[in-house]
Image 1 (cartoon, rainbow, N blue to C red):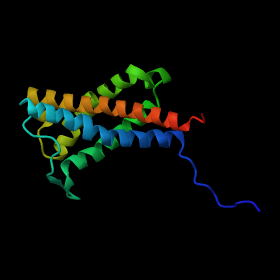
Image 2: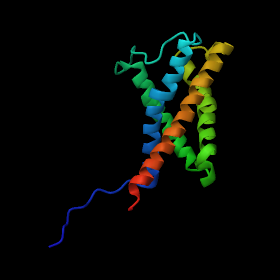
Image 3: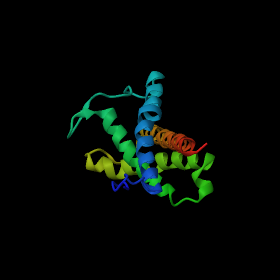
Amino acid sequence: MTDTTASPALPTPLITWLLLGFVAGFISVLTFHQGTIGLAHLIGLAPNPPYNMRPVPPLGVPQFISLSFWGGVWLTVFALAATRLTEPMRSGRNFLIAGLIFGAVVITLFNWFILAPMRGQPLGNGFVPANMIRGMIYNGIFGLGGAIWMTVGLRLMARNSDPA
């Protein structure tokens, strides 16, 4: 008698890549983004400490959890964009640079010119140079960290899939 129960389908490489992007983005906020804010706060360059517990609507989760979720969304977008890169661009230093640029430029511009007006905030962080630079640094380090976490995840998956 043969087993007629269907085994669960393995995720396609694209789905795996996107899930990896989400997890890497979530973790990157908790480590790289918030770590950078913590360091900047410690040396007096940032007004607020990391891991803000202020509840964020509509669910009332702490702000740093909300940021982590959105970091996961952003790195999913980065992962999707990275599927269009050639193989050499998706590995090594090039991939890390792509993550840094994605965070510093794409996410920052989105925050300045789309998200800020939606929230009733001034465009470009009010075009105050210190605030603008701080945002670019936080987002750039987040993107770099996300690319690092994605690389770590890919290496772990490759090691776990080796039949040896």
